[in-house]
Amino acid sequence: MANVSMTVNGRSVSGQCEDRTLLVQFIRENLGLTGTHVGCDTSQCGACVVHVDGKAVKSCTMLAAQADGSEVVTIEGLASGGELHPVQAAFREHHGLQCGFCTPGMIMSAVDMIQRHGGRLDEKTVRQELEGNICRCTGYHNIVKAVLDAASKMGDGTKVAAE
Amino acid sequence: MYATNYHRASSVEDAVKLASSNDEAKYLSGGQTLLPTMKQRLAAPSDLVDLRHVSDMKGISVSGGSIRIGAATTHAEVAKSSEIASACPGLAHLAAHIGDPHVRHMGTIGGSIANNDPAADYPAGLVALNATIVTNKRSIGADDFFTGMFDTALEDGELIVAVEIKAPSKSGYAKFPNPASRYAMTGVFVAKHGDGSVRVAVTGAGSDGVFRQADMEQALASDFSAGAIDGVTVDDSELMSDIHASSAYRANLVKVMAKRAVAAAG
Image 1 (tube, chains in turn yellow, blue):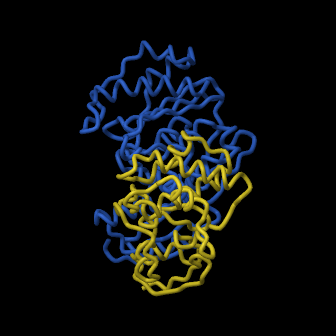
Image 2: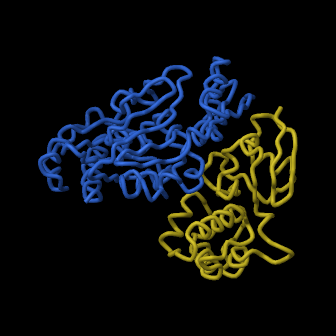
Image 3: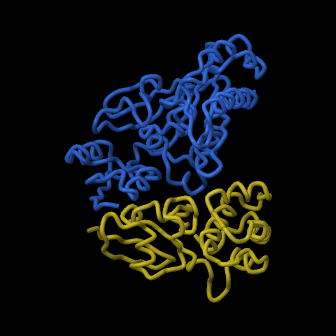
C-alpha cells in the first residue's frame, strides 16, 4: 500500500491506496471529486485531464503514487467563490458542450493551452492542441469558439485561477 | 492492472539498485506506454522504479554543437527548447508531434527509445542523427542500439541516462500520422551532417522497426534536394502491411515523407 499526500485544488490531502491505483481513481474514489471523468481508460479521449504541477496530464495514465507530493488541480478547482473560470464561462456562452462528458477534460486542456500560448491562439492551433481530447457530440466547432473567446478574454499576462 | 510495488528513485545508482533487487522490476519513466500496457495485463512488473525525480537524468544542454538530453526529459521540454530548435530543428519538430499535449507532458525520450515501438518517432530521429545513447554502463551508437521491433541493445537492468547528439548542419522530420493513434504510419528523419554525409531513417514502415534508406542517403549526399529522391525506388518487401496500410502504400509514403523532410530541412 502507498501513503499518498498531495495538494488538490489548494487543499492538502492524503490517503492510502494500492500502489497500482491510478491518479484518476484516487481523485474520484478517495477524494470524491467526480468531476474528472474516465472515458476510454486508454489515454486517448482526454476526459480525465487534470493539471499536475502546472501541466495537463491524463490522470488515467499516471499512478496516484507518482503524484505523491505534487500539486493537482481538477475541474472542481477552477471556479472561485461561485464565479466560473473564464474558460468555463466561455463553454457555457458558446454552447461548447452537449452531453458534457468530455467537458471537464476539454476545459482543463483549454486552460493549459491558453496558459502555454498566452493570447497567441488561432483556430488551427486550438484544433491541434485538442488532439488528445475527444468529443462525440459537438463536432468541436463550439468548443474551439469557446477556447478562442476565453483566450482573448484572459489575454497574454492573465495566468489565472488554476495555478 | 495486476498489483505492483512502486519505488521512487532519487539517483541513477539508486534506480539501478532498486531495479536489480527484483527480477521482475521495470523502470517507469513517463509511463505513457508502460501503464497502458499494464492496464491491458500485457505487462505485469512486480516492481516499478520511478525515474521522474532523478535530477541527473533531466534537462537539455547544448554547447559547441554538442547536444545532451537527459533520458527523463519530456517530449514537451524538447519541443519547446529554444536551444534544440536552433541546434537541431528537426528534432524539436519531431518531439512536438508525438501523441498529444498531455502525453508530451509525461512521455520521455529515454522511455520512448527503450521501448523502441516500431511506429515511434524518436528512433528515426536518433538513427538519422547518429546519436549516442549513454547508459549507466556504456555508450551505444544508435545504429547498434535499435536491434529490432520492441528490442534494443539494453541488457537487463541497464538504464539509459542521456542521449548525445552532434548538431547536424540540416535536419528535418516528416510523418504521416495514423489518424487515430498519431503514431507514425511512416515517418522519415533526414539529417545532413558536418562532414557532408546524409543519413535517412524511417520509422513506422519497417517490419522490424527503424531502418536506414541507403539509396536516399547516397542521392541526397550529392544533391540535398527533394528532387534528388525522385529516382529512388523503395523496395516494399521488408515493409509492414496491416489494416492501416499495405506495404506498397507505405513504400510510397517513405518517399513522400522523405521529400517533405528534406524540404523542411531547407
